[in-house]
Length: 493
Image 1 (spheres, one colour):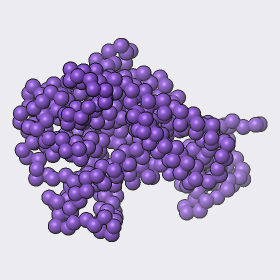
Image 2: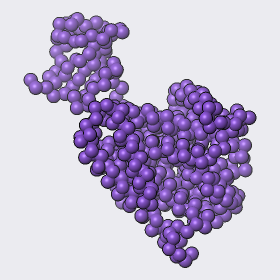
Image 3: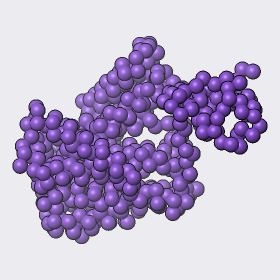
């Protein structure tokens, strides 16, 4: 068994694991395996029950995982397009608040009345069962963002923006609920006012409302400040702009937590406002920067959580974990979705069924379960193992089946092939880009570019012939298999 030293050994072993994970993910993608599932399994194989790597610094694991979640939420917020999200804003917010609470109540009730004794520990009490349900209540943003975007899944009924908004904004809700319920089951007074025991429920509601309101307000304030600041600073370097965005988002997280609000919610709201700000310079380059560090954060976070896992400890809780997972999948999540979206009659039943199926679990629930371990909640190791089993079940069945379920429900849209831009990075404001490969039929009216008689507003801006890049002009003679990069937009003639 290897024990990790925090200075040298950890960096060396993580570098090897990251390298293996990247290569394995390429293979897994071909078979439709979610990236997070690949990373988690590799971490488990490398852990104490696998290669024997021992990493037991729970506080560091929690810190790294929390940091990873903030980066992923930040990236998701920056990439949220409000023009697409605005029509489904109410539905997304309802799912991330009311939907989460209903999921907690339904799942917590099932755990307490049906299988609490088989798990033991806090699961035998009502508040303890609700704690386990809170840990499992969110649709994991990391899993949803990575699966929808890596599979390039386009959905009807504006479901893509709705699901991304829900998953991005309900992690904070689940986190708040977990923290509050950890305090309840640990006997810690939530509000230090000396209130009687019967007021615990009222205290939970008050703290919940305050944390959401404070987090939202801080996020809005930081986001609006950023919109004002960007043109004033006028940075020309995209890396420096990205670092400024990162610092502002982390400030929102830290300050929101400092005043007792939810820092993750503050960060996410600030990120959405900054990402949709017309004053954000070099937005495309900034998003590329955060996309890269988001993948790195996800990879490291899930690997470390996988290393912490003990698969040999799973058998005693396997049956109750599977029962909870199946209840979540087929009862609690669908019931919560249909009840929450009851006012929206125009949303088809098939769309609500798909939303129910996208209740993915991932790194978020494992992190929340780790929080119970760090704070020494009774039976926390059983909670961690239950959550691990349900996460694996969710990623395996829900994650891998999303495209098939979307197609079966007639909700997927055939996406246009990705445009080959030859490495050029052009502003979206210039117009729509398309690529075209010259065939024999294109040359029947003449062999020159001018002979193509392109419609008004369409311009060829680059020609690739083999490995050569050519600047186009009207008298250029085209050849079969030439690649043309075409720009469609407004002209001044």
